[in-house]
Image 1 (cartoon, rainbow, N blue to C red):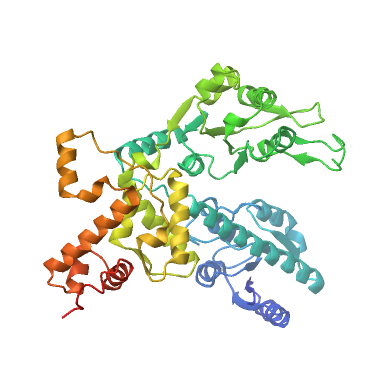
Image 2: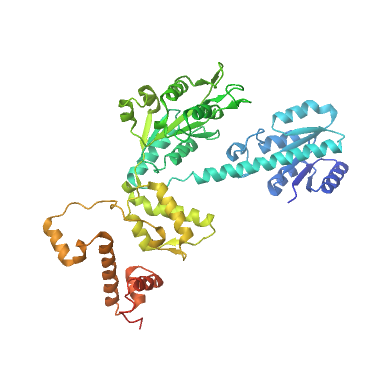
Length: 487
């Protein structure tokens, strides 16, 4: 696809010359003779690059730059780029200013307003070609970064859940996001602590700056220290260049320390200094580096118990535990399971190009009766697997592959008399779990068929099953040989 260039100049001869030269170079060219028309074409044509003369009718080149709200070099955030009204939802193109020798000071002012570069007239064709090539390559990379950042943000931007307990946590996290206080996220593995950390960062004033994730359990102590603080050239064998650590890279943003409970005691002491003084030293250096960071930490360990056992520094614990949230396991928020399942189903069906897939009523019931020991991560993986393995667009329980576990909500104790009555009504209740469930399934199907007069279509509707799935169950249980087909 050809890059589209907008050339703005009030001299028709220069316009014609540049258009011919650029089109011969493989570019698509649109032109404007004044500043007002230039702004219209920037919005309508979305060019990849603008060649802009300074002296223009109606609006000067400087006025055009001001109204574009041109971002500074290196800014890729859509939000920060939109300081004016002209390219909503998009990134403004880079601008190369064209100026006469006598207006160099004006060109410098244009650079301050955000212009990418400037060229003096008369234009040198070779220099022009090099500058345009570099500017369009930079613009392409800038847009790719914006798209990738948008994809990452969208993947981690949605916290699904409306149960009262979870809603209370979300509201508290949004309030905490506006401060720089350290946040400690607690909870079982798979409850969404990293997603929560990313959301707190996105809700905070630091959202335009990096969120750097550090897994404290994935690396050895030496490697983790290097990852956190970086090293100087020659600090150790193989250190042939300076390496900036992730804490330094996160300056102005947020550091997320995942599995902080597994960090070694010596590293805990070094991290404590970062939290207290916001400064550190690279490995092999005596120079102190100051950073402006916000720290969010997460663990599935009981840190109070770890402090008592001498495995975690008490002073670090209190530094991290300024604000804390305990994310509930999925079994304690069953009302959120259907919404989470639909969210993951939509994402995975789009990724695997199986749009239109849905969960059957029996599949939803199976998920609600499962305890989810792996929490949200297990639910995500279960839906991803079902999308791949399901033989039809409607996902049935067998495609979920859930193995029996303890019920998510154990029934309240009942009287022995009630147990005896149930055993008399349902004699298979005294059988082992799988055999009991098999017999109960047979009983439900036989009852529905009896009530429908043997009509399998009506029986399937009564059981909220697909007709084909009921037929498959009947074949598996050898019921199809005992009963007549639909009349």
